[in-house]
Image (cartoon, rainbow over all chains, first blue to last red; front, side, top):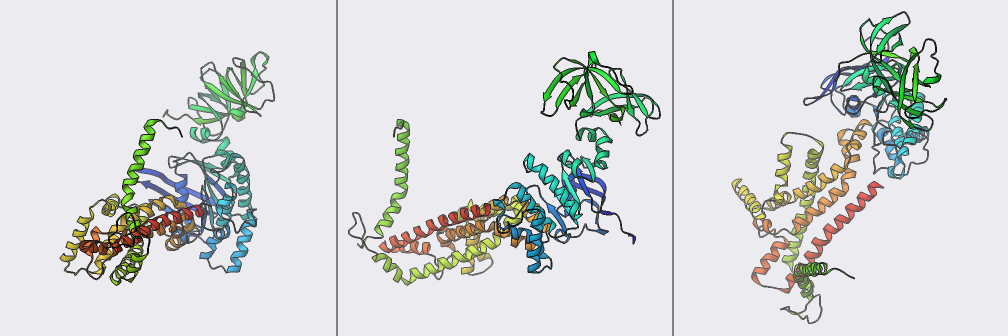
Length: 369
Length: 265
């Protein structure tokens, strides 16, 4: 280890976790910068929680090293790791008062009685629940309980804050509030945080870095905009947002755009990112919000935009927006979300769909699974 | 109340079963208050005579003392052995777990006579005399399954996250047990103790094999008294036993339910 401070606070090196024949995490290398909020995102069973629990010491890696602040912690017992963990169902001690819950971790550190009282009071103020010291956990609502769990975890000033789907037990409305609160709190405290979720909105809205996982593998990591706008593969594109996939073939390119012929025979332009060559089998990824539908009879294609024809097959009204399912001549359906700035369409309407090359992203076509 | 005739038959039948089950017990309780030496119905008056006689009977008082000491020690020892065993079965995985669990629960299914003889033979083989320790070990074996079942059931209900949270906050496994698991387990431990006390307190069959003249328990004493004569004192003693063995589990159940509710609140 050099004398220079390593900006990567938490490092996973070649981490493997097997349960019998089942591999939960496969050869994972991951760096978490100091002070960052990093989200492990993926469907259930992708290994994200296992990875978090290995860092906490609740599971033992089959192979590999876990390094926190320059020290390998594989052999450090859980209670000596100084990590704050937030559980999905809060895990507040039901038999203890809120005060005793929050003070719990301090009792195992050399903190005087007066200091404990002071710190607990401060922590409850930080989570905006002052004065609940004497209540029992069951007397608080779900959102309040999660805040107490947060207070209990931050009061020990942990090196890393670990959150295992902390919002999934909450109501939809509450979740949004709590999400912002956790985000603000994390920024305020500057504590390195690892947040596990299967909810892409949570991941996109609060992360400094998102790690998308599936089947124990890291599929992509990057800041939210990169992961959302430049997905590395089909799975990432599909998991984040409403994506359309148009299979096609590269037929040419210039400095700015790649030309792709899709099934319908239309040739669409996609902004040049990465290297493609003629004949490559690709998928054109377009977010449902990026398409614009126009009535075919009045349609004048805009210069430099992609356009192709289709017919409204289905629609669902969502209040602020309308979801259209548009059938292309090839039989493929695309999903278009229209913000209703223009008129709405009905079943069977012939429309022209337009999308800017900038919003078309290319990924290599994977063999069918 | 209008019930179809089939239902009224079932009701009458049920009542008859209950009468059949409880009449002997009620007779014992009633006759214990009968002042006559050879009690029979109808009763001639009401007195606590046999209870006073009982209170003055040194051998019976001695047996009571034996029973209570034995029952209490059994309760403490069984729980002390049962809690770690239950923890191991619920929280950890190890080879032969199911087999071991079945073995520990076996005393419920094995006839007590067999258990009684087996332990006696074992003691002979070790060339040890019958003693209070033997009796105690025997009763621990008898009551352990019940404590295991009660504590395991509760432990399953205590989410592992509580213990995990405690450990991530800095509590060692030992501190975690005392500050989190044990308090949450307390109702079950208490119920288990009362269970094992009660079972030990009114066990006859196995105890007959293990008891010596010096450490007879109340049920064994009653059994012995019945062989010689039928004294009304036995009715009084029986009534005391009934009250104790019925009220203790009821009390235990009540307490554990209250604790459970308090813990949820």
